Image (cartoon, rainbow, N blue to C red; front, side, top):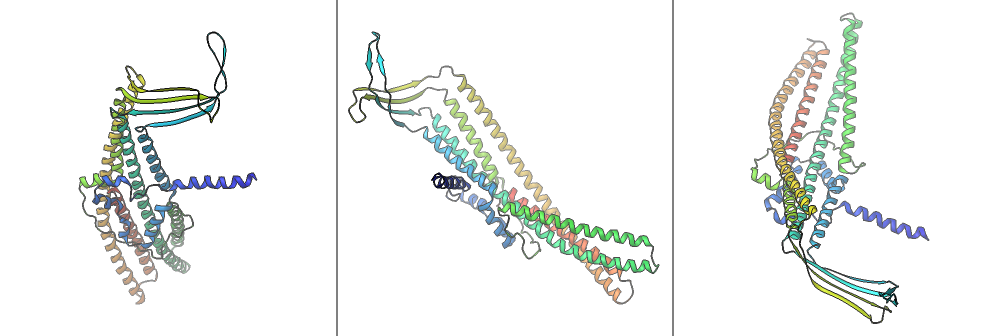
Length: 448
């Protein structure tokens, strides 16, 4: 019987625990949006990753935004901030309660005579602090700004997650293409080993040349193993980011897209739409309101109180004794070291939040400049690498033609092919770095 009861209870507890994985308030309908301009909302909500035209990447990011456990933790913090806001707002409202209980006993006066006391007692209490100074409303506004900071933390986490998935996805595609090129280079290396061995057996070249070529061949094999290792690790990383360790992560094509150009953004637009900056700004406002609330707490406070207590011998009968109290109360904190210390604590929190805001703005601007410098410079490097590949393709084609004519030995086209493959791998590495720089720039700009 106990097991039948325990299983439903355990299931309910588990379901309750799982329910915190998604925020109770939809981000699209959140009240924080009411204080954000429409253009800034579009920038934050912009699915910038779709500009790469990769359907597999779109699937990964869409799945991660709903399944990633780390993102669920950030969303749960937003739920907690919502609850703390309601808790702060409750302090401004009146409180009312009822009490009933059983207390059997006797009362003895100064003449030491025993008196029977009514065992059943009941009471009611009403209390309402009138916020004349505004300290309670300041605390509520602080909780509201803290809720806003948690809201922007969710968007910042979504931006960070999407950028990491995009970088890992393109790295997997790069490694997949590099692996195919390395297999071609390894086959060419095997051909060079055969040619060198035949030349060594014929006494045309020294035996050390064969040993060097064999060592080079083993290096190409080791490079393949290294790329395979990195590819598998990247797949595990991508599955972890998506939140599903069994989902397929690679697409059929290993080609890398060419990112579009990025328009300029003003500092005003950046400050009004970047989730990390908005979160830091909200924390400054929250700290300022908490400092204000602590200062106002040094002033007198006014409260309305009412209470009633009755007692009787029966729970259902009329009470024989009644006592009630109604009236206001005034709290005059003449000297309260705890309240004064709280003012200093909240002041340091406000100073810290302001410093963190300035630091966040400087970091974001630095990330934008660094990503832009890398992006523009690597675009120049890519042009140079493309010209190198074109030149080596011509060299390889020319070597094949000369070998067909019998002018050169068959090892020359194989060496030309290896040089071409090395250049192609280098070109793909620069291309993938450009994509990383583009993603970093999009993230630094707040996803707009």
